Structure formats: structure tokens, C-alpha cells
Length: 268
Image (cartoon, rainbow, N blue to C red; front, side, top):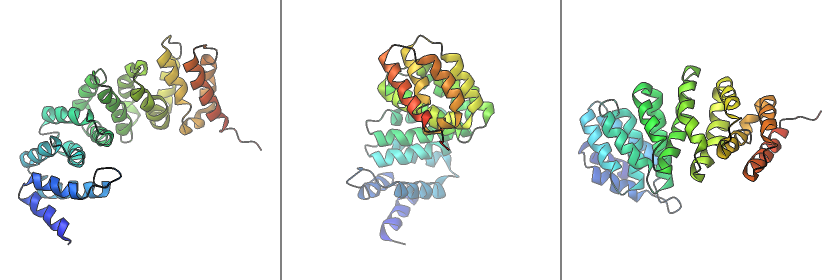
């Protein structure tokens, strides 16, 4: 066992969370400014091996790491939270909210991943948290709600689709560029559409008559995703209802979607 790994295990055993952070910081790369993902996963695994059976100790460490100034430590915390969530739901939700609104984009990604785990595992308990987040003042937190739905959908069958779409629906009107970038093409087109095609296509059809420019833009952008090529006919129907909209933002999205769907046509 190398010296760094031994030092890490000693620090964890002694609940010396500040030393855990120091060790994480020694591994950060110049490029990302955080420790490599593999290193963070090793830290998470080592902490859970030692303290998973003692929630009070695990939460103390999770909270300490999450409230630190270290991006790497916050990322580790975000993926410890799902394990201790059942014992400390309110405290975990509050800490995740802070991590999801962090100034570091990579930390926000890890927070969304942690949220996705919780929603998949503790759906009924965590769902109200996401309902609140979708209306949060911070675009970072609203965007986290979008990604949480996408990540959770990987583990949830079609019986959850309607409730997941209820989180997404008001965000279809969200004018934040950060939210928009992650919604139509990414979370829906490359995510929910693949997993719940019937639910999503029916839902999009119910929205296509909206006067809201951002809603229509998001619908078009769904079909700019590579995965949407599998639903060519449905895409053609919805885009045909949008292509005469004269608003430039929608025109550009529709054109992008048409170009993508055209790639689904195989010339023989």
C-alpha cells in the first residue's frame, strides 16, 4: 500500500477530516484544479468502508467535507450524501443545495449526480425537494433539478415518467441559458426520450401548441439530439407544427432539428 493511501486510511479512521482534505488537495491536477475522479472514488469507498455502519460519524465527515473550501472535498461529500440521506434527510438536502449552487462547475456536476442517486433510491422522500428546486432563485439549482431527473431516470421504470416530467415541465419556460443548454437536447433528447419514449412524445405533443417561445424552442431542440433520430416520424410531426413560427430563435432550433433528423434517413 502506498504512503498516500495509508495516510488516507489513517486520517479516515481517526476522523481527521481536515487531513482527508489535505490529501485530496495534494492530488489535484493543474488542468481541472480538482483531484481525478478515480481518486475521489477511492476516498468515497474508503470512507464508506470505515463508517457506513455508523451514520452519525458518516454524516459528520460528509458535512465537514461539504462545507469546506475544497472543490474535491465537496464532490466527495456529494456522493456520500446519498448513503447517509435516510438518517439526515433535511440536513442532506440543505447541504446538497449549497453544493449544487457552488461557483465551480465541476462541483455542480457531482452534486447533480448525488441528487440523481437519492431520487432513484428515495423517490417519495426526495421528490418534494426537487419540486422546490425547480422554482429556486438560482439557475444553478434549477439546472441541477433538470440533471437530477435525467440521472434518476436511468434507474426508474416508466411508472415514474409522469412525475419526472412534472418536474421538467415548468422549466421548459425557463429563460436561463444555463437551464436551456441542459434541458431540451440533453436531459430530454438524449435522456428521457430514450427511456420513456411514449410518455415523452405524448407530453411534447401536449406542449407544442404553446405560445411560449422557450417552450417551443426546447421542443425543437429535443430533436436535435442524436438519440431523437430513432423517433423520426414523431419528430417530423412536431417540427411541422413549429416550422412556420417566425420567431428567429425557434426557426434556428427547428432548422437544427431538421438537419439532425435528416441523418436518420439512409439512402439505399
